[in-house]
Length: 172
Image 1: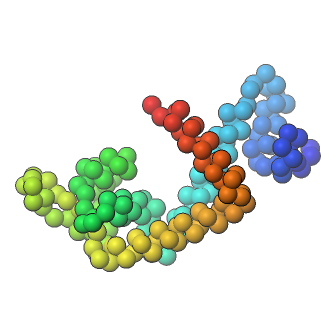
Image 2: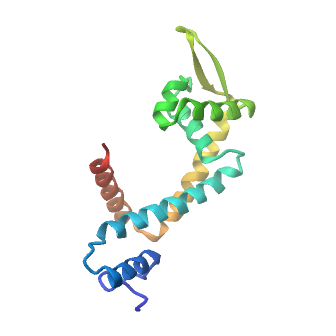
Image 3: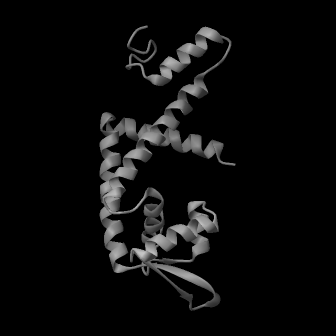
């Protein structure tokens, strides 16, 4: 088997090997979707692992980064309700509570009564949480930028557009 893809001339990868195996045993299958999503899944796993390592130096996981980043993106006063956080991050309330407990114990956020609804809480970044997320987001973006270094700006923009279209077409 050649070390380059016959259509693109790009080096073969593990997904090419899988596609080749399917072609040998089931030549009737159209494996184009497998070629795309096999690579998307592998890329997501590789980048997930890479981002986990990047955030580890700050003492947080990717999931905890997401909570802090969501609060940061909300703008001053960096406050949201636990319900809004759960909905934004597509988490159950139980999953969110665990993350909030850990981040609160670390002094990165605080929970307090909502002044407009006595039954509700609000979650706010602390000064320490704000400093940490600002540093961590820079580190994470540097990792992602490094991962894209094999593409030029035009290729990266084209890929982003294709993924945006695909994501839109698959969102239920």
